[in-house]
Amino acid sequence: MTVLAACAGNGETSADAGPSASRTSAPAGDTATSPAAKSSAILAKTSDIPKEGGKVFPDQKVVVVQPSAGKFRAYSAVCTHRGCTVSDVSSGMINCPCHGSMFWLDGKVMGGPATKPLPEVPIKVDGDTISLA
Image (tube, rainbow, N blue to C red; front, side):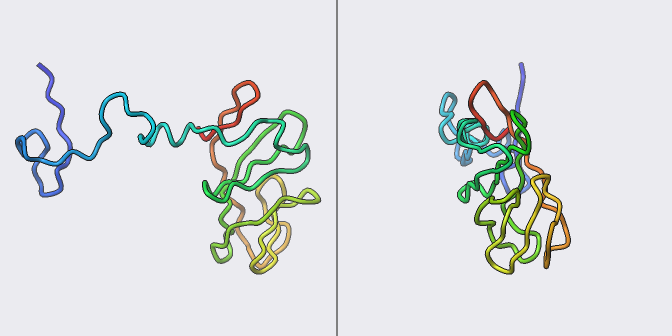
């Protein structure tokens, strides 16, 4: 017999808390609301990301770039200067509208006031689709 225990919030495990313990996990088979389903949701088609350019996904706070043909990378779309969301990718730069910070397509700072690079975000390219890993 296998017993699984999870934190019930008051020092008890859900196995100890009895039938009245609240359950916060999604029901089995409900992948639409599970974190794994959200992280693997398709962001874009590869054809949506221009070569030597990119696209910002503000809802996911991610910017996906294609620095060279067929090579895709993603970074946090949150500027490392003051936390604004970058607005666009143009002329080979990821641009922040708040204070003018610019980042190269490898996430490194091209021009401040930001001094730290954008953190890389794992993505999965499967055929012609790009999703968060």
